[in-house]
Image 1 (cartoon, rainbow over the protein chains, first blue to last red):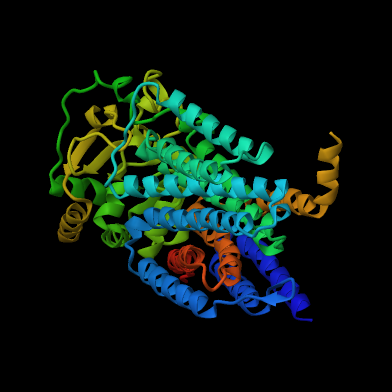
Image 2: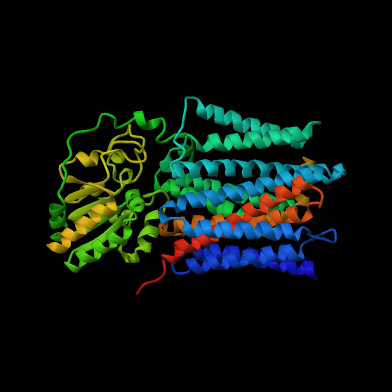
Length: 468
Length: 102
């Protein structure tokens, strides 16, 4: 009776995951989708704690379990509530790493449990294979996510050296060979080799993410996200647990598709992202010879140009997120609209540090959904736009992506802002963007620069516009 | 070869689930607008926190005297909970900003 009830709990869990994910892909239902999945998760967890039994034996150690659940809940809620909107991507990466570590730990504990059980038949080849898979994928996901987290919050710099890809491939092969040897031949020092696999997988995870440029981090996080899904599914296979299996595989498949969609948005292949060492070694490749003179625009000139325009297009980028300038930006938009100027936002799919980053940020400031144009729509409208205001975006408006085959971002679709009559660029300095390449746009005659922190600059600009 | 067939036959139910879930996963998010990429990634991140169930099972099975297993299991449950709770709360915070305004 109780076991059947548990099966029902797991069934509900699996269904809520699918329905939740489906609802998450529609703006109107997304929030409820998330809550539904969370509810299903709760049922599955509570069911496991109280109903699960193995060989007629219920789970024990309730004090430990509840203490751990309590600590994790408090810490997780606090971290998630306190994090700034700008740091969301890091947070997702961090939580993803936790999941990976959890999967790897399960493999370690289960392995120790089976090998010390005294009955060698318990640790059959299938179990060992699944344990090894969960271990490797979980460890890589954990180590990689931690590096991605460090990179996004700036504590770890891009690091690449010659021949790194060869070393990476060798590391991966070594890990897999050692694991395969453990499974197939079961050497006498199985336990030692088992921990050898842990160490190798962790090192591989670090080296896997380390050379990948910061601009590609969203793709990497999404990929690691799907890795963790697969690692969770390994646990499901191991315990014949359907909710873990369905949840894990669901995320594994959806995460992989999401990764590919993100790569497509940048017009690059996944292979190119992973092996390209974008931003690391490619800096010397293109754009070094660019340069020239740029001109600055005064606040009052910028205010005049924008107030008397018919149509203004705002291009937000990471600079806007860092400065937390989304609310001022919305104020400026409303003030200009009140003066009869049509204001829209052009959103590049990979602006910021994560796809959709800008949408989330602008939604926070109550910018209406219809004002946000996707790249294709925006590119059609730039021709009839009088002023483009770029707020802390750089690589996504770099014309080198279209014109300079030697540039590392060549081929990436960009917002074609140079089609507009005037371009005003707000940046903190002339320093290149995240990909580390110069932007010829800043030196074009129709472009003028408005230096300063996005929030400060927008506040001043807003004051000027109101004074007109 | 025979071994492989036997293995497949013995685990056919699991294999069916895996294959079908791959298609469901792809189908379910196939038409997601780019606006929702970040929350979707975050939501999926919370869902793979289901790994916590495995952690609870190993924790609950650990023998009383086996301190190392208890400590590792404890750590696994804490990390898994972080993944689940943090993941869902972060996603909810992101989506809160999408609430309809008329």
